Figure (spheres, helix red, strand yellow):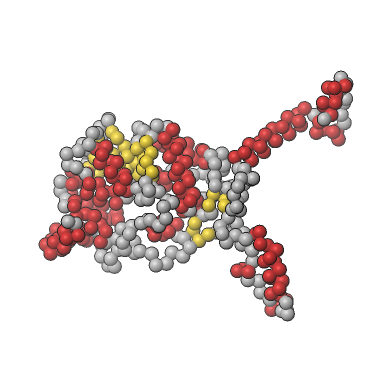
Length: 367
């Protein structure tokens, strides 16, 4: 206002130290601060029609048990419970207090399926087939397991979600040439992998976070992705980012293994195809569904913790009874069945070669 009046009157006044806020540098800084605040609020609208309690800075959405809005009611209830009690005899109970957004969500993980060592079956299949890995050619179609890709890239706590997405794009650009990427779906209710996800998270599930690309990821990656709402939202965002970079992205309704295999088998009809994934389920399904008349089809592992392995699916299929593999895999522990107590994962595969009665019984389930 002071500056405008000076322009109107054609006069120029000097200022003392106590009016430093009217200087040009201070006004520029105030303008920059105002624009920063506006940009912050535009991407985190605090007036959006949303009945949930959430933090506009981190995007964390409160669980139903969070009750700071009932602080007055809870406080009066505590005071009421204090009546006729001596101070030394009164104990504050946590269940009677207000639940804040800082409370970590967790779940008991007792009673889960007995876990099998699925990698042992992969080792047994490779050993039984005695196959040599085929060499890759220059004209290759890559099919990526999106779930495996999701966990391969580490996240830095100071990065925005846009920076995290760009990290995935750069990794895919560096390793593959415009691949097909298949992601799991996580919002279709109970799935075959619920028990697996719960076991991997050890029962610790992060809060729901409504993020945007400019928001800094303040949560740990493991806790963020343990929440199915967060995971589905991030998978959708990452898929859009990868599609803009030229990748073909597919989203499964639930577990992606079947869609990955169907995509790979259809691609192998026309050109050499490489599936990137570490799941034994993929190996079993590829061996079961691949057509021996197709072009070379390879399964390659790029795990950080396990040795890299390249498996020639066509070569292995000619050496094994592949139509029985789904049952042999399921009977001794997979995502939906529990491992038999005291029975090694690879034992059914070995037994079917030596026990004709067992083989006949297995074929009953596979016809």
